[in-house]
Image 1 (tube, rainbow, N blue to C red):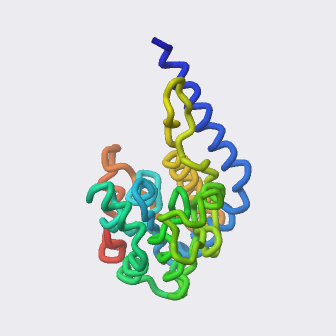
Image 2: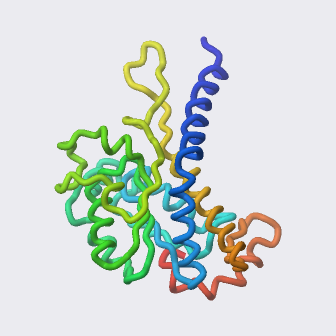
Length: 254
């Protein structure tokens, strides 16, 4: 039997290489996006985030109600594309024309709001409908997805929006997560399919980096934003309770 450490080291190296590439190449995009988010929080406006499509829903949950995260982040946690309702159902819903439009219209976004759209591959119908609908409502959009994956996906892929658009083409700002086509990156001898997906790592790193840059920019403006403390940390409940009345009723999933 081969050494598990060798396999773990290979996977770790590939994840680390991907995150280092994001860090090296996306600094300008992160800075622009952080300025947009800082402007919203300075005006005491929410930052909305939606991750339609299977595991991409994890991205919106990663920075919502999160220790060390911004209390102004409001996740659109729609059950339609979550795996909890069934994996095949999730895939069918993310490919359904008009579904993303309904979700965004139901979220109550208004002109001047900001919506972060996260999806590993950047092509599915619900995602593109969400982006297009947000734009028609006067909402600024920030996309977080892989340009490479979108551009290398077939134009007639069944997940694609009828317009064949990619997320990076229809948002106001885009942050490229560099996820390779197929997501999985490790090849095992005698195994026909690659294993070891990387998109969740890429999304989590990118979004947490964006949050940190936003917080730093606010502090440079002499604004200290409310930040969640873990409820399991000493004094966590007490620290968070000071701000709850400010966000209850505004953040739908709180």
